Amino acid sequence: MLRTHTCGQLRAEQVGQEVTLCGWVDTNRDHGGTLFIDLRDRYGKTQVVFAPEGGAAQLEESRKIRGEDVIKVTGKVAKRPEGTINAKIGTGEIELRVTKFELLNKSNNAPFSPTQKDLPGEDLRLKYRYLDLRRPEMQTALKLRNDIILEMRNYFAENDFLDVETPILGRSTPEGARDYLVPSRVHNGMFYALPQSPQLYKQILMVAGYDRYVQVARCFRDEDLRADRQPEFTQLDLEMSFVTHHDVINMIDGLMLRLAKKFLGMDLKLPLPHMTWDEAMERFGHDAPDLRYGCELIDCTDIAAKCDFRVFKETADAGKKVRGINAPGGAAFYSRKLIDELTEFVKQFEAKGLAWFRVEPDGKLFSPIAKNFTEEQLTAIKERMGAKPGDIMFFVADTWAVSCKALHNIRKKVGVDLKLYDPKSYSFSWIVEFPMFEFDNEEKRWNSMHHPFTAPRPQDIPMLETDPGKARAVAYDLVINGSEAGGGTIRIHDSATQSKVFGLLGIDAETAKNRFGFLLDALQMGAPPHGGIALGIDRCIMLFGGLDNIREVIAFPKTQKAADMMTEAPNEVDLKQLRELGIRIATSEVK
Image 1: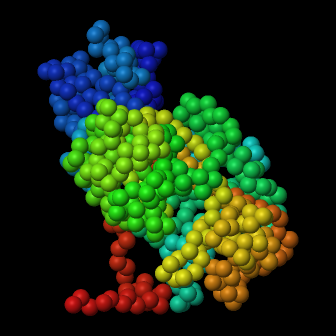
Image 2: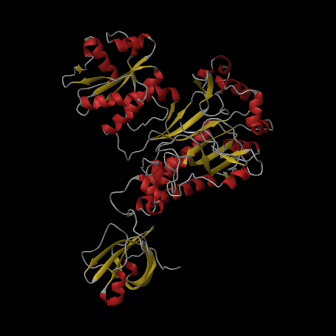
């Protein structure tokens, strides 16, 4: 090794020892005849001192050192003088008095410093990701990622799971998001697909008798991105045989108990709370509700039906919904200007407008539309909403689906605006009993809420024939702080039910054979009852790290346009490569 210790390792016990450190120059301070340098590596920082006793030549040479240069220094560990101890860092009691140093590599002028307070824009940080990764915050996040994945592996090894790798190059089975396709040189005109998940392979492993499978799996989806989405992502993927959904959920409960204790210092109470999909949508307007605060959605359609406010009355008469939330203490915060901004905000969620009532100090309701309501109706609204003086209520009048979407997003905004929860707090819960299907109005057919192999509740199997929209799946999502951290289902393992589900999805026997033939054949070769779940590792680490951008926990992420700023991928390739693959690029003429 070029070094005897890391830059975060030395303590007062090493005073008097001769040691060698290597690292990056973090800061340098020239105090006349003495030069102080903070030397940094991923383990920490050590103050390094170039003093006159080291020789005039060495001191002069050390003055040429600049930030981000890589150096090697040898010297004796000394106690810092009284009054200069830095209690904020582990090495703050000591310094290294240099007797010899070597410049290992000179750094060009960096576009930004990894330790500067005001960071540049994300594009520049991603362009020079190797500089960004030197930031202590990034190193902490990636260390957390390593430690959480290690803890996950240990937990599942202790519970008798086998870690099995599944293929990256597989068959395209179009369903859900778009596949990333890989052309084959050997089989010209044919393509592999990168896996959106190991779903089909892990089910086959259950048929093969492996009973408990787990994998930290790379997955790929060609979809539009958000702050918490990436085109390539990592899942903690598992499958279990001879289980009910309770067994899968209990297994993940145990994992969350362990992770929360080790990384958050929390003692979770098991079992984690459960809420049905129907209840979540009714109370919160979303299937991944943040349970750290209230502001639940309240239905006031029956009251609205009797009032003279045309928008409310016509909405109720048309069989739609008038629903709202009460923002506690929000009357003083939400000025007329902010209410107008909130009205524009909800329009992006298909709502046509936003009605509001402010509760005055005397308990009366004030609103531009209040004159359209009787005193009895206003009192009924206030009581239904549980509103008190100083509160403000927001209402959306539209279809049930639009009211869910709009009020869910208002609720999120109100929670942040009014600081209704501690951002460092955590809430873990399960959402269960999702609908089997959602109807596609454009295509006039049913789509799977999860995937085509999701099992219906046994009592709902007759509904597949009579009323598919009411059938509920044996499906379950883990929700942490209002984010879906993972989702799973019990799988269909009998061909009769699978055929019914395919039929509802518009997948005929020939198409099913073409897309999923290998799995369907396997399921008829003694398939056990089985089910599993996939946790989004990137998202879980983001949540456990208290971050709000998934790119902060991935070493080399893509932008929201699925580009790698550092390597400039995707990029063009040579014509020779295209010819070998039998590919010609078709471009549309710009008009």
